[in-house]
Image 1 (cartoon, rainbow, N blue to C red):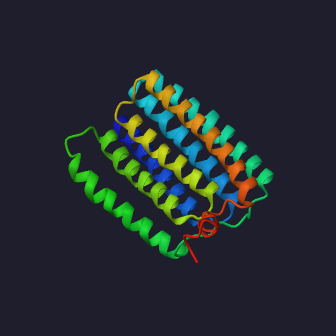
Image 2: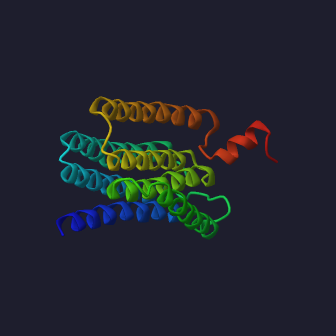
Image 3: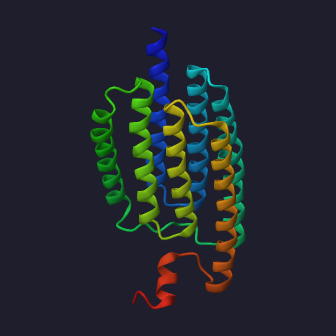
Length: 221
C-alpha cells in the first residue's frame, strides 16, 4: 500500500512536469514564459525531493536544493532583468503557430511512451515511469527550441530540456553528487555566457529575434 502511494505521488509529480512543459509550449508572452519556467523548476524540485525521500538518498536532496535555488529563483529573476534591460519584444513568435506546436508536442509525448515503456519492462517502476516522462520533457524542450524565434525563449527551452535529464537521473537512482554539482554549475555558467552574448547581440543588431538576425546576414529575404 505504502509503495503504491509512493509510486502514485512520483507519477503525479513527473506528470505535472510534463503538463508544465506543455504550458511552456502554449505561452507566447516572455514574462509568462519565464514565470512558467520557474514553476517548471519548482515541480522538478518537488519530484526530485520525493525521489530522495523514497530512495532514502540524501544526495538527491542536494539536487532538489540546487534546482530550487538556481532554476526556480536565480535564473528566472535574472531572465526578467535581462528582458527588461534589453527591452525585447514581449510577445514570442512561434514557427507554425501555437496549435500546430501543441499537436506536435502531443505526438512526441505519445512517441516517448510507446518507445520507452516497452523498452524498460524489467526496470524499477519508479525509474520506468520517470524515464518515459523525462524523454517527453526532453523532446518538448527541443521542440520549443526549434519553434521559437526569440533567443530568450530558446534559452528557456534549453533549460527545460535539462530539467528532463535531471528527472531521468533522479528516477534512475540518481547520479553521484559531484556529477550533479558539476552539471548544475555548468548550466549556471552557460546561462551567464548566453546572457552576455544576448547583450552583445542586442547592442550590435538592436534585436534578439533570430529571424531578424538571419535577415541581416542575408540568409532570408
